[in-house]
Image (cartoon, rainbow, N blue to C red; front, side, top):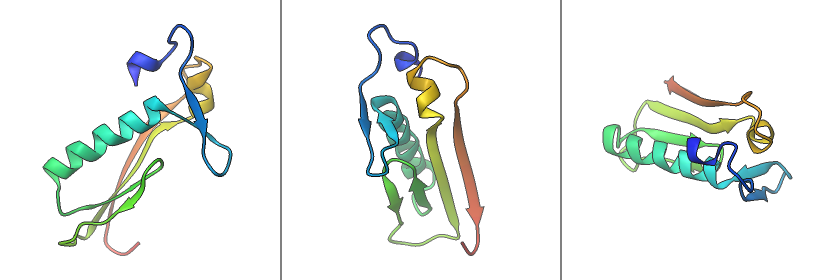
Length: 93
């Protein structure tokens, strides 16, 4: 995320179907989190803001919930009022 924050020339932005912005930083951060979880907790499910749901073929009681940049509009405009949200649920959804 850091290399894209307040980047000279801005950061490339696309829009999701709900017209909310998404950047390469959003996608890259979620991809990095998913890679770590795949290596450290391969049986767990993952629900992410940018890439949706991926469920383990083995199954697990644990589900990780990821929002790589909560406050993308603030991030795009260079305001330090965004965060990275990571949650872990155990049991029924």
